[in-house]
Length: 151
Image (cartoon, rainbow, N blue to C red; front, side, top):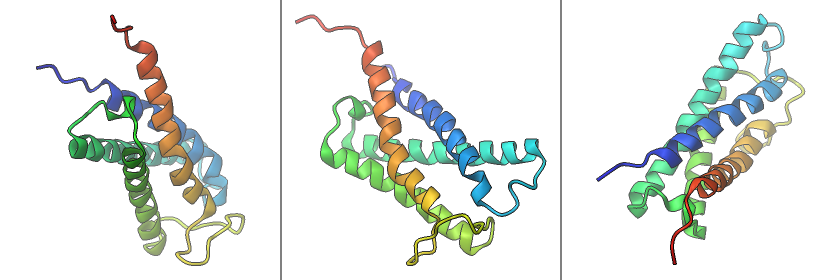
């Protein structure tokens, strides 16, 4: 039996790249990021993006284990997509909440903050938009690379 980790690897690589761009774009909304040496800020954003990618893959893997189907994204269903998006968002926003409370990072005055949990709008949008967009992109690429089946 061969293990096809292609979908998860592709998803991880997409997640790393897209989240890195997102982290770089939102960096000015955090205190101290613009004052850091450029390489230090870039390395910090890359580290954050790598963590984001890991959380995306964890959400993917949990759904794959729960459905016993590691290629579930090729045949997405509402429940699977909902579980994936919810797990990704819970991890990302949970980490954001803990990190803000522990003052691992601080929002600058430009960051819009929602009043209930005190989370920044940019991280909320990141975890609401990106997981499904990344899954769609990885799925689309996977389907393009799949040979046509004989009828």
